[in-house]
Length: 121
Image 1: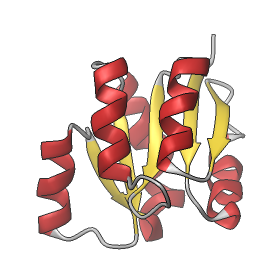
Image 2 (image 1 turned 90 degrees about the vertical axis):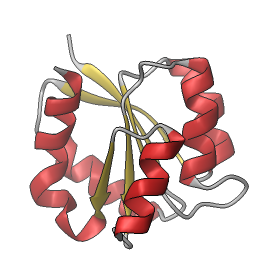
Image 3 (image 1 turned 135 degrees about the horizontal axis):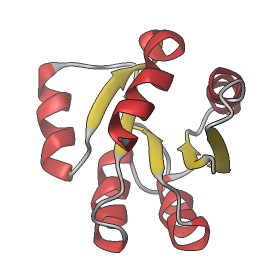
């Protein structure tokens, strides 16, 4: 059975790129694509994903705020913060918010599928 992935990014182009990266893998299925952190929290309640990929900068609720709320709903759900800025400060803040990994968007096509499989083991 394919693992269900939630993708949250305010850029439709980035969401499409993530879908293109993950679609070839028969073990992964995108259960929801949303544009805001608030929608991500709502979709976690609805689709019960196995993993969430969240943009850091989103309207209504950023990726860190969404991670905190998601972890209240599903504490064991792996969360990847997907960002342009992968500074040490953001890495620390992401871990503090409960994220399991931080990945630069520039590395996404190469590292995202492997990272997802590692976190789902």
